[in-house]
Length: 130
Image 1 (cartoon, rainbow, N blue to C red):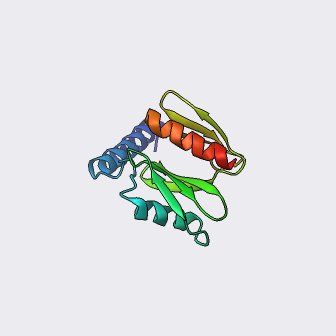
Image 2: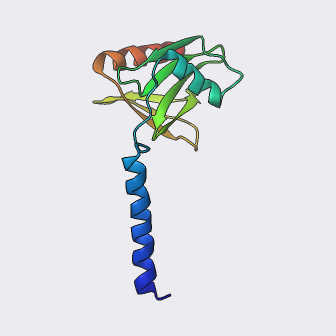
């Protein structure tokens, strides 16, 4: 098959799949419905480390987790969530929340959207445990 036919077919096919996924609602950002959902998201990543305390952010896109092992964060990554410990993290406030640099090549940086009160509270909490 000539490239002049194959390339448009592939492009239209990929575009069509993306449109169908979006129309079915599968492109929505994940949210944490409540503390139990944040705990469950954490336990999917770290099944042996039960959260002792969970702090949800206002838009429910992230949660600060406290465990016996240390602090961590659960956040939305597309239509799913992921979690990481904050050991060795560098945390900087931004205009829209917190920027976290992790010593982890699988998730080297996290940009959390928080309101101003949450930004100060989360930063204060994390600095006390660093």
